[in-house]
Length: 145
Image (cartoon, rainbow, N blue to C red; front, side, top):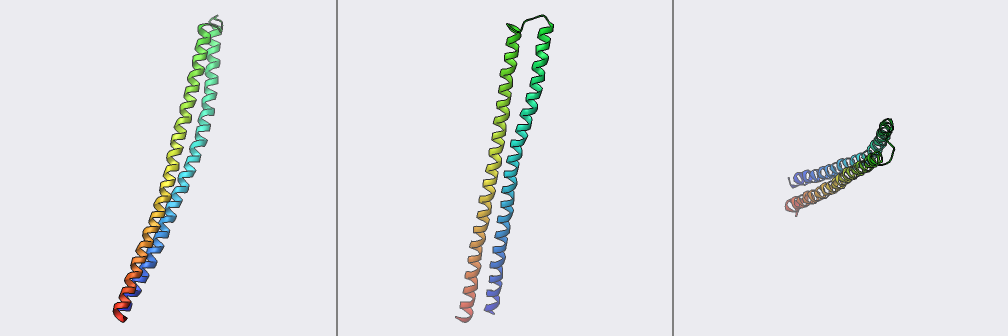
C-alpha cells in the first residue's frame, strides 16, 4: 500500500504546483491593473490641470474686467491682484502635479508588491512540491526498499 501513498503525494505535488502558478498569475494580473491605474492617474492629472487652466484664465479675465470697470489702471494694486492670482495658480498646479506623482508612485509600488507576492507564492508552491515528492519517495522506499 506504499504505492497509494506515493501516488497521492505525487498528485498533491502537482496540485501544489498548479496552485502556485495560479496564485502567481493572479498577482501578475493585480500588478498589471495597478500599473494601468498609475497611467490613468497621469491622464486624470493632465485633464485636471487643463480644466484648472481654463478656469483660471476665465477668473483672470473676470478680474481684469472688474479692475478696468472700476476705472483703475492695471498697475499698482490691480496688477498685484493679478500677479497674486497667477502665483496661486502655479502653486495649485504644483500641488496637482505632486499629488498625482505620489498616487502614481503608490500604484507602481503596489504593482511591485503584487509581483513579489506572486513570486513568493510560486516559490512556496515549489517547496511544497518538493516536500510531497520527498514523501512519495519515502513511501516507496518504506514499501519496497
